[in-house]
Length: 311
Image 1 (cartoon, rainbow, N blue to C red):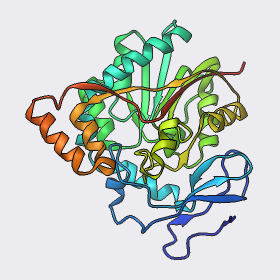
Image 2: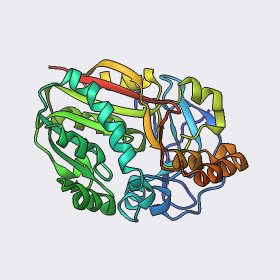
Image 3: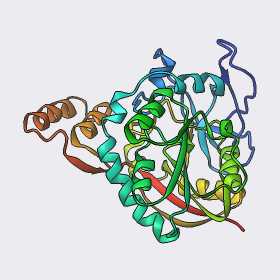
Image 4: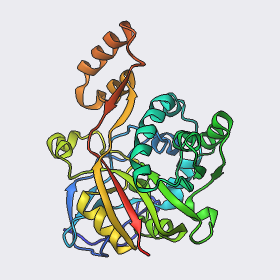
């Protein structure tokens, strides 16, 4: 157990923090740190990064939230997110469009009027593209310059560079705010969700998905769980995420597994850290059969939550 609060003495790039959910400092180490990453920041923090978690993972003994501690400072990580290209990520755009089309079927059960939708950390804009085609007024923001420009050029979208806080959006500006694969990357999830709540209209909906460290597959895979990545700072369960949403003024109305569609060759490649030679052989077979681009469902513990802003 420990309750560090000082800057990392070796590099000055690291910081130790209390629990973001309850403020607790009584922490238990769940996964000790490994040798620190030597990867360039723009490689380590790109959207398609599969670099395994290096930093220590701790659990708050008061509320159960798990998070990386100590961790790189926010300004250091943001510099990594801004820079670099990500051809691997955009290669999956057609499959991501399929994922988001299915997700919108559910979202529109709660918000059928198709008002103004804002996507935070929209990456290359595949979700905004699908929503726009279905009649939504859409906009979004993305810190990575290359991905944002790709989305503007490919989809003709309004993607603002930077983070949600950078945009200084008006109060109650949006009917729906979506947060796909973003919350676990933020340095201050509670502050981030408060900002989402602020820009939503009363009764508006927040859609957020996260890797669920409490899911059965995460527990089964243990230290081999593919979502234990250097780019993730927080690891939520359904319970800790619900508590965080309630704390900032949301009522949770739906929780379900979030199934994505990706190309088979890409999924096999992602499995290499666990499957090793078997994944590499499978990849060669799939490629030889011409099945690498086949869209397949992919789920390793992602959870989707729909929450309504309290009036």
